[in-house]
Length: 394
Image (cartoon, rainbow, N blue to C red):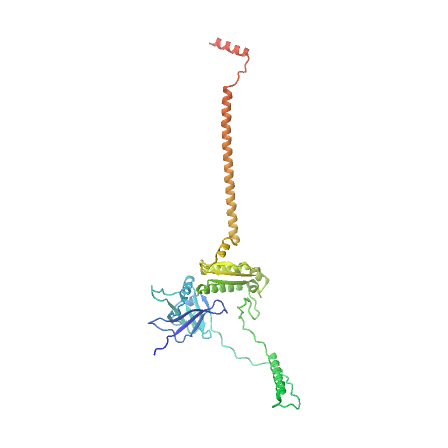
């Protein structure tokens, strides 16, 4: 009886600390090599990188293998296309983050009619990967011996004459109450557990570390942009037609280093980074800011191609535009109005010119008529004198 071949379930983390979502179930290529037996049953792809350490071949460090998807959900082709279009490699650590699995954007094209084959590689010792900035976590230090003496809890003795064994129900209640008081006092004397430096609560959008370390505006914007890119990547391979992105300005500004940093984090910048991430993943998606009564809380709905409702498209066609585009439109309208005024003025000048020309023609005609029909205003004596002169000259 043949044993079942090794399978590996891949999951994709939309954001740090978010619940991973299923990507694919991999199995060795039929007729080829099987998956490495030391691989776990599940690996979460936690992030992406363009650094050379993830895609450069190095047989002395990496163990490469080929696999196909056997889950039937067909999410893997879209995921590999995303990696190829952006020259990114996805990676996920396992075995207490001491080993790493990488799926590079460099993949062989599948022949027509053949199943898609994905090339992956594993480094069992993360510290042996040249140029990799991630290192295995250091071993946990042993708890240090207590340097201060803790006050011993005060135990109230039982009343005299009370039975320690078989004291009935009342005796048991008194003893239980005393034990509870002792445990409460011991718990109050224990030092509070400290959170490791650098850990953060990603569920509520808190931008400060849990140990109170402040962050700069650049750090907050970089983390927000990365989380948006990961959300869009996960949405690209998901089957849902719409993604709702909630932006909370107060959560992003919380516990920043200074008021100047808070002033740098604005709602317009956060919305722009969401729109930028949408355009980077798929230019045919539609991003629509839903109406909101609050200035510091916004929800942006991202629709895949052909999934946006007609009312959303209509609203976007006449909706809000960036100030730059508005300025261009106002300038274009001003130029069009100026050209229209120049055309009107040119028409008026042409009409005036024609009117003046027609008037000049009429005046010339009237002059000719007057010259032909003018009355002789000479006296009889002047007429006789001119007649005598003509006679003498002839």
